[in-house]
Image 1 (cartoon, rainbow, N blue to C red):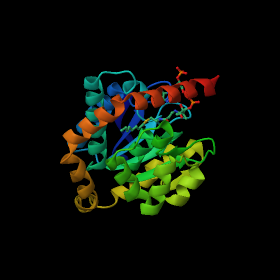
Image 2: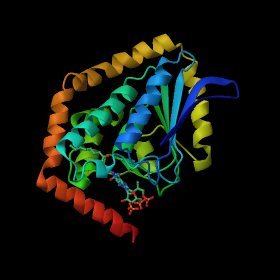
Image 3: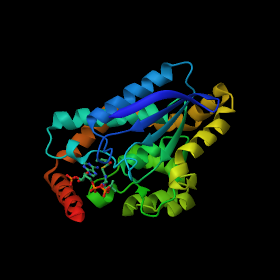
Image 4: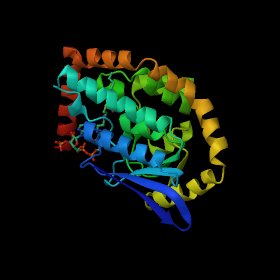
Length: 260
Ligand code: CO8
């Protein structure tokens, strides 16, 4: 589901590239989330690794967000286990000591957008067919507080209010305008631009950068850390409701119909 490896290119050592490869759309299921967490944990412990670029090996999609099938028609136990894995992914990325850059080479709704927003810098393919945003309300579900916090820390209070309530998916140009992504480049230059941006970030001494990152992100991380169990309980209770299950069913049908 994932290919991660340290690579050394043009003298840029200590930079890993993580490529999500879970066809068709890199939806974040339990397996992919677990693979991502294990890979990141290993890189975090690897003293020779200083930076991570995360991208997609699938055409047109960075990640379709959380795998809806992990939340639809599943037991409360399964939903709880799944949600813990989502929390773990967010905690590991948002709190990573590495320089993390998202090379967003396709659409990135919901959980895909969340994952990109945990990174230090975002480069997106300038293709108007792609979109990015937290569209949860469109599915009839509610993005939890730490999704909201991540968005708020990225684009500010007012933009978050509109983005979240309306479940807005932005084109790359709009996403750049509101600061959801930092840079747009032609599709075939996303990865090379990420590598170039990495050079700039790695010019800063790790120690100073890491303490600064932690100072900025720690209060947001602590909020979830001290509420993890409750957050799992809330999620399971919410997602198990008949009305929510029904909404997810309708949404899945819509995805299939749209295809036909
Ligand atoms: N989960 C499960 N299956 C999915 C998902 C998903 N997130 N996204 C797409 N699929 C499936 C489709 O149903 C389709 O299945 P099939 O082949 O059986 O018909 C297959 O993947 C391919 O999808 P498309 O044909 O739609 O592929 P496209 O390349 O045309 O489009 C997109 C790719 C743009 C990614 C499109 O698939 C899409 O918009 N997907 C839905 C994205 C979405 O809305 N995700 C939200 C997930 S919820 C989430 O991440 C946060 C939840 C927070 C929970 C809070 C509760 C308290």
